[in-house]
Length: 229
Image (tube, rainbow, N blue to C red; front, side, top):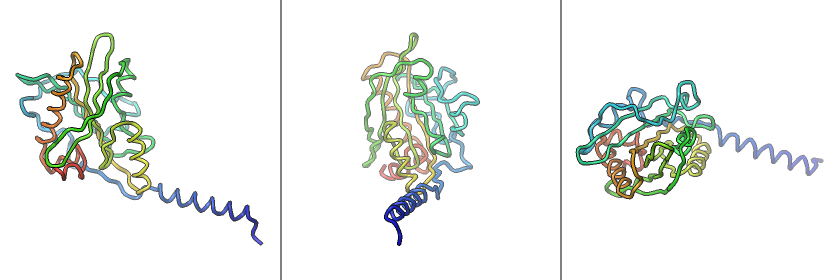
């Protein structure tokens, strides 16, 4: 006769096995083709902004770090305009997002180099059609610099607004057997953090997405949102 505790133990093992099976990755979802460079996705001219040389960036990776292994491609550009604020654009792409390798949000990388983070809020930017892009805005400040920031992250086809959503969406993808790629897209400027400055960063973000070729937009914002523009 089988003891009750053996039945319970067997049930626990079965449940564990089912969970392990559910969490076993089965499909790698990559929205940036292997033969494409991130550098070629976003135009060098966006609205009235054009690229100029610069090295004034706070970067999400340093040589030999975990982030260096995470991001397989990065792009840093300074865009200037004759009638608008300068915008520093950082794009960091990783072909694999898992428990060890996942996007570092600006709250983490700026804090790591001595900045204080304040004024964090989420907004949704209309891209045309029914598409609304979820973006997080915040301000990073140290003794010599104030940097208003707007950014978003894409994990597979998801666009999490904060670290909690990012972890939850990644877990859902694990249950679906998906290993996603991911990208961080960050826009910032140096100066006082005002509503007008954030309005300009939002304008740049919308102009950037709409200036990108329709076939390349999923790399930036995912297939689902790109299909709504």
